[in-house]
Image 1 (cartoon, rainbow, N blue to C red):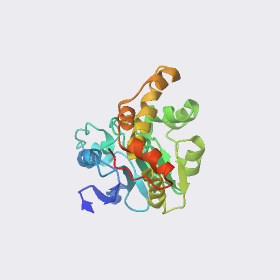
Image 2 (image 1 turned 90 degrees about the vertical axis):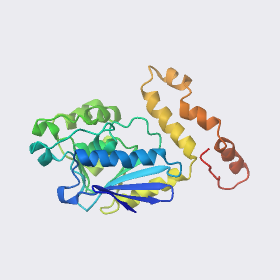
Image 3 (image 1 turned 30 degrees about the vertical axis):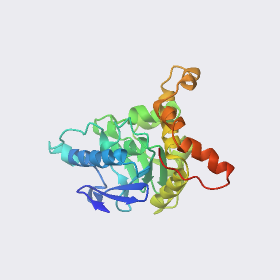
Image 4 (image 1 turned 135 degrees about the vertical axis):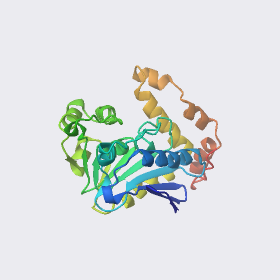
Length: 259
């Protein structure tokens, strides 16, 4: 395990687990933390041996309370990292899958970190909100844009305009939470999802993620389906594209090479 100032990083085989580590302020983040996390995710993106990432929070109270308002109030906010809150919310070119293991409160920027992930696994005690308007701010790290793209607009606006708190099970009913697990088991639940992803071809997973997200921005379904996205092309030209059907025919587990 590698230790940083504001997070811990543990690589378990092909899985990277990043833990936001400021439990004394409910894992709220500031400029220095964003820049540190940017480096962590840059390395994750660049390393061929890491295929899936999990982000969670230290302690049993919070995933992340979002922006460290005390730092901001003291006039020490500092510049945001180019890749956004926690080095993730403006990172639009990461095709490796990310899972948020939400172990408690996910407020404001904390919720926006989770929304920037592909899968959200929430403990039963998790609570989600975009409370920025209550303190004169806007959920500008993607909250006001990602949430309406994930759930019906009227339901999204019901959260955005009021800052109300939504518990984990309601989050699953609304559609932004993937899975709800018992309190204290968010990370274990996220690891189960990661294990299922790791059974698949990493190149096919990345091609699927890239096509899914980019296809949402296509003018029509026909346009989305007619487009061959870069990761999709790379996948069809890979050794793994041959290995998958071959392993199936031979009734064995595929030996993915990620090339």
